[in-house]
Image (tube, rainbow, N blue to C red; front, side, top):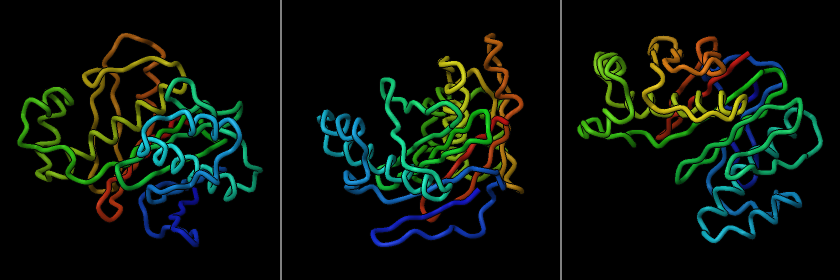
Length: 227
């Protein structure tokens, strides 16, 4: 998998990450900015219909990342329409888009069954807000993450869940609550796994997926892949 970081004038490969080698898969990251020129026809229409300036910037930045993924994979640009606020990927493709207040990320693949990405500003989740932690994590997760003694991992675990949710949602359009999964973080090799606790059989595919994460300057980046 090729990972690109994009600035105003160039795109370069991101070296030395813990992410896997995935065939026919590319990821790109860029600062939140005005990339309206990268948008295709229906994307332009969706962009103009958004009332919020920051929402237009986030939307355009995510699609800008996907344009660079398409270029990296050697395919012609194709539109990514929306179903509600969720990207709708063409047949034969899987993808995911995420953004923080300052950074956007997109991933595109035609070798996976499902893929999800999430980017979060480090330390977004305050470990001192106990009620917040209890709303986001199961008792098992609270014990597990707490035992790792690294406050950065609370935000990391939140992003890992988001990446996994995005991947499985693309398969069955089922909402999954935060307490329907347990996440296991492996700090040594920067991977994570998911145990589905709910009663919807389609979502058990989370159990067979694999997650990967890394730090990127002041952000956490999480990827979840279902083969």
